[in-house]
Length: 155
Image (cartoon, rainbow, N blue to C red; front, top):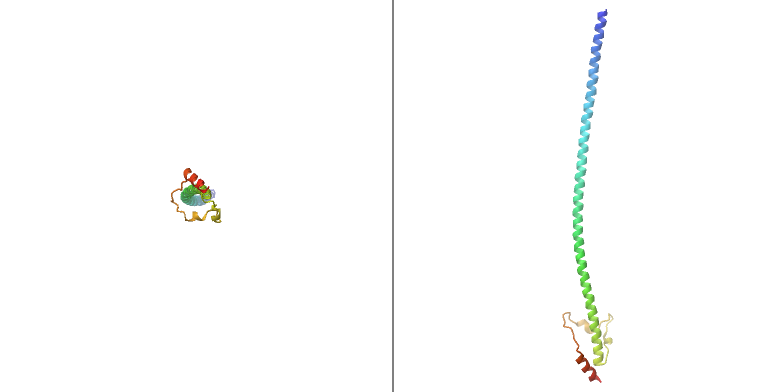
């Protein structure tokens, strides 16, 4: 009987070691499955991260393009503004010069004819004669000699 108990205890150890091997194989299989799952999850995560980076790079490129277009438009607008400002300055200077000429001519007409040009003024402050003036007309120059001749002739 002792021999039978040794044999039965030996077969029990063989059965136990087979069961332990099955458990160990199952554990290893689960570890391998988890490892593969983690690898796949990491791969998907890297792909999402790469796609996000690509999207951000495309967005940066688009924003740089828009920024460049805005800068070009700003430069064009700034140049246009400078041109308009220069033209306005020129027009203001011409207005001052023409106003001065008008005043001189009014005074000259008063001394020559004894009447004022104020009666010919339009509501905007200019005389009716200025309305037909050509822009490229030569300047009217009055000499002092001519002025004195007119003044003494009226006396």
